[in-house]
Image (tube, rainbow, N blue to C red; front, side, top):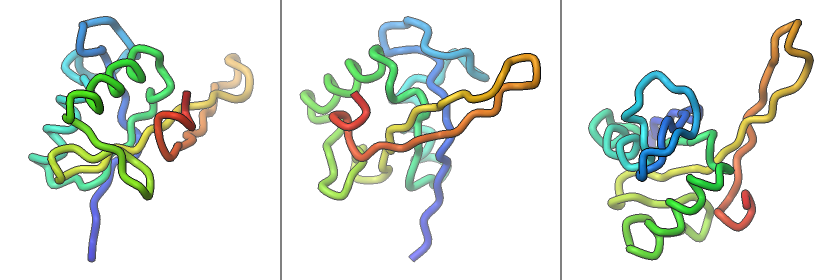
Amino acid sequence: MRFYGDLHVHVARSIKGAPVKIAASKNLTVLNILEKSILKGIDIVGIVDGASPLILEELKEYIQEGILFSLEEGGLRYKNKVTLILGSEIEIGKEEKGSPHLTCYFRDIESIS
């Protein structure tokens, strides 16, 4: 079985319009990212702004509303078509030399909070 994924996606805005990260498009909300992933045939998407309090609040609301559900193995499932993996970036080094960053992924909301 083959899976397609994009594990480094930034969320630009919360569903309420608050900025999260400077991204390629203002339309990069969690739900828009998930919908576009389905259209593009992406099975697994990792948002690297998953530790943002705005995003965590939004994800908890989606779980409560039944829009997302937690998978036992980790991740959040959307429309039974795409799995969302929560991630966060860690920047290391000094700005004057460039700032390399690493991505870390987490099993669930509790482990990233």
